[in-house]
Amino acid sequence: MSETGAAKKKGSKLKWIAIIIVVIVAAFSGGILYYLNGLGAPDPSNTDEITVEIPSGSGASYIVDLLDEQGLVKNRTAAKIKAKIGGYDSLQANTYLLNKSMTFPEIMEVINTGNFDYLLKESIKVADGARLEQVANDISEQLGYYPKEIMNKWCDTEYLKELIDKYWFLTDEILDDKVMYPLEGYLYADTYYLTSDDVTIESFTEMCLDQMDEALTERKAQIEASGFTGHEFLNMTSIVTKEATADDQAGVAGVFMNRLEEGMSLGSDVTVCYIFQEDRVDLKVSQLSSDSPYNTRKVAGLPPGPICQVISDAMDSVINYEDNDYLFFFAGPDGTVYYAKTEAEHEKNISEHPWSEEDLAQ
Image (tube, rainbow, N blue to C red):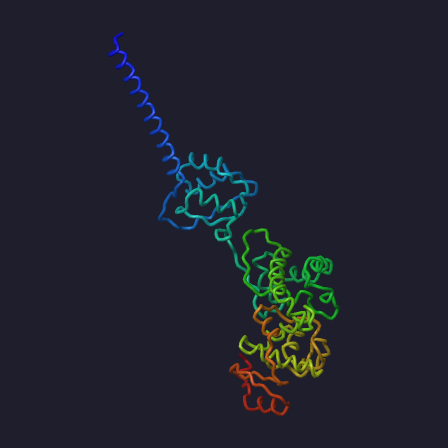
């Protein structure tokens, strides 16, 4: 073969090699693009929420099938590959709210981290100022228990001892026979979000106590400096919560501090209301004369325990109470609080700002 023929043959061979390389590169690039495109959002403009329940023990491949059934996977083959190589080793069983504008990697990251923002949540509110019985009634339907079942658990001595062992701020003070409801005042007033259907009385209780732990721990040094035990502090905070609105709580707390300093009874009607599990202004003479230790009209000092649930703002009002020299206060029908240094001044405030029968009925 001539040199010219050999050169042509070699050139042809190189040409074919180049063509093959180009084809391989093109195929590889096309495959990569196909793969990456397959991991994209099925419908970028569709943000309608789709509920997806991921069962316990689900693997990445099984989750792809679940997502695909809901139309949340653009390309099942690409998703299967990504699921296998993606390193998803902490997939969280739960119920998620997803949408078709999310890419497959975004969805898997949500499930792998149990992202709270995408969880199906049901809210339960523990109202500021609510008595424990009211809380039990408010949450019973959502938790799936009768109010009596909830209250029985909250009064179970063995369960309470377990909680005392777990939370630093819960002490044997709550087990005193004079305390009407041991956990009264300890369930932090807030809105709680449930992210599963298997919430129990115990797990919900601990959600509330965890919040209370956070609030009290933040103020622990100040509470200790006040001379109150944690129980006494929540006790005072609960009374202030029921007696005044947020704007007046520091002033009212100052009055109560003065009365404690003087060795006087607190003279608080809201503690009398608590005896009868009521919220009213026009207390009966028979109620005011009750021998209950919660009757601070008759008994000096704090009652045996808190009378409602509280929030951190009220705690701060007690910690930073207004340093005044008043011993009396009276809330008029329009909500204005009138302070007095003497009983005579107090009676004058009452006479000048009387509650009408219509006011009392509201």
